[in-house]
Length: 222
Image (cartoon, rainbow, N blue to C red; front, side, top):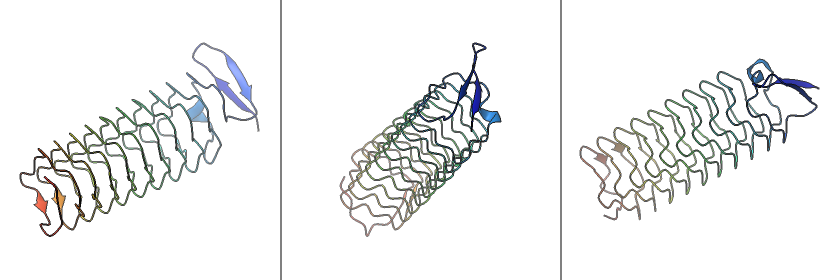
């Protein structure tokens, strides 16, 4: 299959495969059928992939920084080790996606569906996850320092040894979440739901717990 790609400078190039290609500033990617395709190791920085169906795509090790992916569908896609710094994923569907060790720092993820996603070791430094759906997500050892998780659904999520220092978790649902060994120092947990959450060994130094629904039977370290 041959892919005809148009670029902002007016040039047109043809590719037999999109894997490992430099597709920066491509203008017609939204017109292509990319579902299930291999785009691994490609440079897609500054591209417009909004509203695209990228389900089951191989996007591992891609450069997706500053890319528009809002309201796109990335169901079960592989984004492991990819760079999504400062991309816009507002309202996107990443349900059951593989994003281990992905760089999502400063990324816009408002109302994004990350339920059941594998986010092991992912970097969400200062990312905006306002009202995101992270139900049952695997966030073991993820970096969520300074992230906005206000109103987010983290029920049943695995946050073992995750870094949530300085994060905004106000109004978040953390019921049944595994927060053992997590760093919540300086985090805002106002009105958050922590019922049945595992807080064994969690660090809550200077955390704001006003109005928090807390299961006192679980151990905490303050």
